[in-house]
Length: 142
Image (cartoon, rainbow, N blue to C red; front, side, top):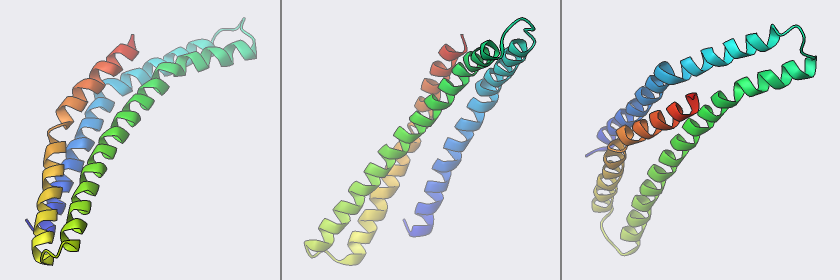
C-alpha cells in the first residue's frame, strides 16, 4: 500500500465517522434542539415568572441538549485517541526498525501496513460507536 492508498483509507474512515455524526444529528439531536427551543419559548411566555425564574427555566431546557453534545464529543474524542495511539505505536515500531538496522524501504512498507490496519480496525468500530451513541442519546431524550 502506498501513501495515496493509505490516505484514501483514512478518508473513508473520516467519511464513515462524518456520516455517523450526521445521522445522529438528523435522527436525534435535531429533535432535542426543537424540544429545547419549545421549552425555552414556554419559559419566556410565563408572564408571572421573574427574570431570574425565566433564566433558570431556560437553563433547565438546555440541559439535555448540552449533555447530548458532551456525550457525542466525548465518544468521538475517545475514538480519535484510540486511533492516534495505534498510529503512534506504528511509528514507534518503525523507529525501532530503523534503529535496529532494517532497510528504510522495508520499514516504510511495514509502517504503512500497520497504519492501514489501524484505520481498518477502527473503521469496524464505527457501527458500534453509533449504536452506543444512539442509545445514550435516547436515554437523554426522556
